[in-house]
Image (cartoon, rainbow, N blue to C red):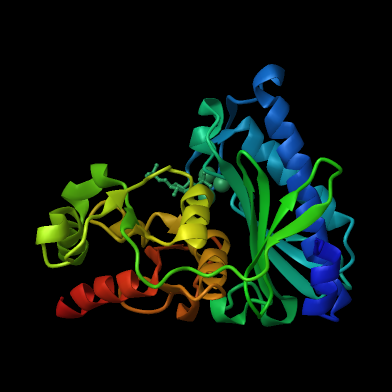
Length: 315
Ligand code: AHG
Ligand code: MN
Ligand code: MN
Ligand code: MN
């Protein structure tokens, strides 16, 4: 079995890049241990503070952020950290050449009900500044804290999947993930239907119409409310994830964040043959305007993403 160190050695000879990914994987292993003990330690509640997103921070949001920060502080290659949980970017190793953008704990509304959550990260060259298109990523990944603790990571080749074994080693379980082009599963928060635009409404209606409708097949719906959980399902068996722009999120530009949710997930899905779109353009081509920018996110099986884009083109 290939382990993370062997895979990284084959994927890159840039020591710094391998080092940052190893540091994020180590942070993930530490967060996994904290999450397993959290209900007993009474840590699944609120931290009593509000983050720059306007969200009530969970204690584990803050703890996870601190764990990521500690592991990256110990890594000489990281000069800048952007985090969902920090108002401003943090400057780390002055001699470092890499920037990391992270969602230290994604899906934190699920923490007190023991549902899969995750840590998402994106790695870029610090020389390009903090506002670079997702296309410029050097690597991206997430750790999913589920029945197994999985690390999904891509440099510039194929997206690969590792699992944490009982000795703390990351063992490769999927060498090259492949998102099937077509699928019978879609993921959207259907409670927001009254806010949807016409394209989203028409796409979902085709799916719900099933075998006798224009899609000509039966669809299933899944919405975990934890992006890492929904995307991992799509990466492993296909499907499409939609958090489109709607009348309520319009003022903010969307719900999910570009630098540390949309871009890394789009990078990983594309590295497995899937596609991403805002509805109008590939997420990876969006020019960021600020570090906590929000963006519509539609990504997954290529045929499904193409069908959504066709509805958007019809306006
Ligand atoms: P986070 O916990 O990092 O703030 O992210 C939560 C996000 C994402 O994980 C999930 O897909 C989405 O929020 C769910 O939004 P709704 O609760 O509106 O469905
Ligand atoms: Mn949050
Ligand atoms: Mn998130
Ligand atoms: Mn988060």
